[in-house]
Image (cartoon, rainbow, N blue to C red; front, side, top):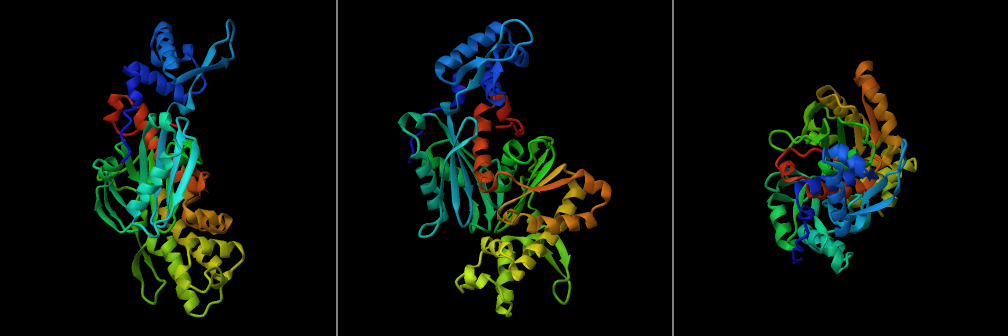
Length: 410
C-alpha cells in the first residue's frame, strides 16, 4: 500500500488563497492587477497572498507583461511540478496510466495488458509503476488518482454497477483503490473523461455543447452541455451503444442495439463470419490464420491497405454510426460531435461515408449547425481526462465540492 502523503492543495490555507491559485493555473500568465480584478480582492491582499504562494513553491514570476501605459506588470504562472495527478484509462484489453503535472501535461505513460493477472491486479500494478516515476519529495505532492472505466457507474459511491468489457458487476472500485493507495480517488465513465479531455485540450475547446462518441470494443458517449458533464438522473446518460435500432440485415427485421452493429466487437464478429463463409481478406495474414484473434485494429489496418472486406466493414459501421449520430443531433442539438476510440483511427475511410449518410439523414439546417470530427488526443484522451478529474477537485473551493462539476480548461 502507498501511504497517504497528506498533500492537499487546500492546505495553502483559506479560500481566497485557493481561489487565486486556481485562477493563476487557469489563466497563465496573469498579473497581480488582473487577479485583483477577477477576484474582487484589493491589490494589497492579492500581493500578500501571491507572496505566500511564491514562498510555498506554488507560483513563480516569469517576467514583464505588456502595458497600456506606465509600469509593465510582473506576470505570474503556477509552477507545473508543484503537484501531480495520475489518470487511468481502464480497458478490458489494456490499462493505461499517465502521470501529469498541474498544467495537465503528461510526463510519463505506463501501459499494461491483463494477461496472467486479473484486471484489478493489473490496474494496481499499472498505478504502482506510475507512482514509481516520482521521487520521494514529488510523491508528497501527489494529489490523487482519477480513473475512467467503461460501463455503468454510480458516480456518487464510486461503484461500477456493471461493465461487460471487464466482466464486472457491483465492484466498489473507489473503495478498493483507496484501500490500496490511501490517496483521493475520482471515478467516472471512460467516455465522460475522454469528453472532458477533448473539451479542455483537444477538438472541443470552442464548443460548450458537444457529444464525444468512443468506439473501441464497445460504444459509449460522454455528453457536455453548457460546459458541464451531463450524467442524467441516475448518472448513466451517454450509453448510446444500448439504443435500439430496427435492422433488416437478416431475412426478417429484428431489434438490435447500436453497439451490436458498429462496435469493435461487432466488426470483429462480422469479419470472422465473412471469412468463414469464404470471403478473401488480408485479415487471414494479419491474424496468422487465427481468426479468433482478429481485432478492430487489424480491420482498420487492412482497410487502409485496401482490403475489400475490411473496407466494407468500416463503411457499414460508418452507416450505422451516422444513424446514431443523427438521432443524437435531433435529441440534443450539439454544436460538435467528436468520434474517438479505436475506430476513429480509420480516418477518412470512416468519415467520408459517415458524412455522406448524415447529409441524407439530416435536414440542411441541422446538418449545417453540427460539426462532426475525430478527436485530437487519440489514445491519450482517457488518461488526460481522468487526471483532470483530480485537478478539478484539487483546485475547487469547499463550496464547489458540493456543486455539480463545472468544467475548467487544463
